Length: 68
Image (cartoon, rainbow, N blue to C red; front, side, top):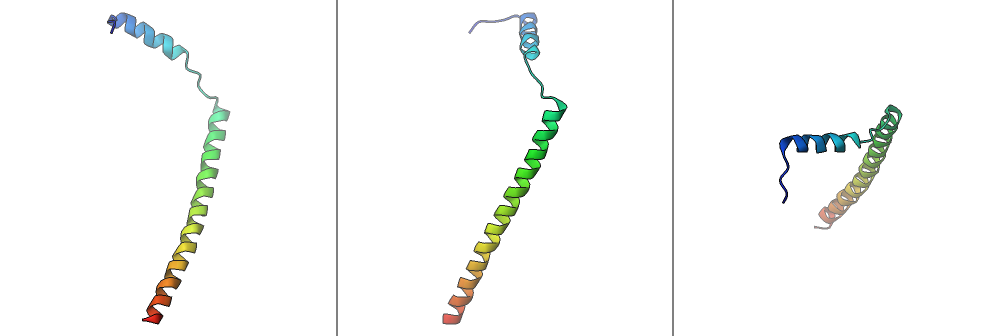
């Protein structure tokens, strides 16, 4: 592995940092809105699935208790 001097390293970091393309404020807001929408949708979906399967399990347990 080639050794670089601290000054050369700092110059390389500056060069690489200048290549970064930061998102605009509009892109950041749109991404944040999409994240909120998707997490809310998935949260409601999994809440519904959990409620549905919970009801099935409660019905099965009540059915099994009635049979004993």
